[in-house]
Image (cartoon, rainbow, N blue to C red; front, side, top):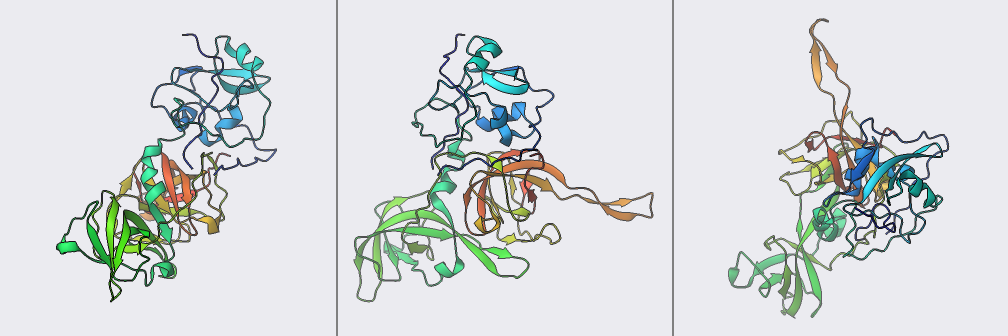
Length: 382
């Protein structure tokens, strides 16, 4: 197949602010190429940037360090189905590039010098592959927010629906307990179980998920507001749901995975979208236990909440290794002495939405099902 020489390498575009790459130290060794890395790989529909990078690197978050970019392109970070990737040694460096029909010689001829990354603006209809399937996190990008518990105190709430309906849909009327601004559209939010700091027992964050939008149609003398539902999501509206102006959080136009630079280790505190009565936020690692009230397991492409936020240095695009705490065993050859085995790396996650003390992260890989209490550290291979 003859390939278009103007096609370059790897789409990083997702909806949402540009995350600048981390500058690596001068003495940082080159990323490790996998022993079984293919010399030639044909990009398939459904591939993602992370999947393709993982075929070549033991640390896929360092993909840009081995990527040969094409100086003819306005955006050198594109890759398309049916593109042929080849592994080459160019000027002593092992690089991956798109074969334009001339092999490694063609890649070297068209290479551009390293340059500072710029924001990428790609039309959503572009056929290039993405970093991650946006559909897997759109729900959490658009509708889930972390707020201060103090901000929710005294917030207006739903007290009933017209004619006592239990299931509400677009066009139905619901009632809030406070006087709201006539004609204004408000968000209706379901409050999830709070995140609790095990060291202090205090609630450190509350999670709300938008279930509907409603426009204020009238306000009674006693202050009760009538809202007509303009948009409803898959969840029903219930008594007690909070009412406030929709939250607008800025989203990055692209995600660039980089090793996390955080002030401490952390842990997974909630598998998003699965039953878990309470998330316990443990600020220490790993000398406090996590109390769980239900079984919640996550895998690749799932979303998790972690107890690292902007306060601890977490940023959009930060990659963290996930570790399962080592099991306790008895050494039968040493009087049944109890020994804890080393922690085992079982996956990687990438932060896509960071709040003050909590962040949402996308599961990039998982050798075992992830669960609450799994430990988090910056990637060991930098």
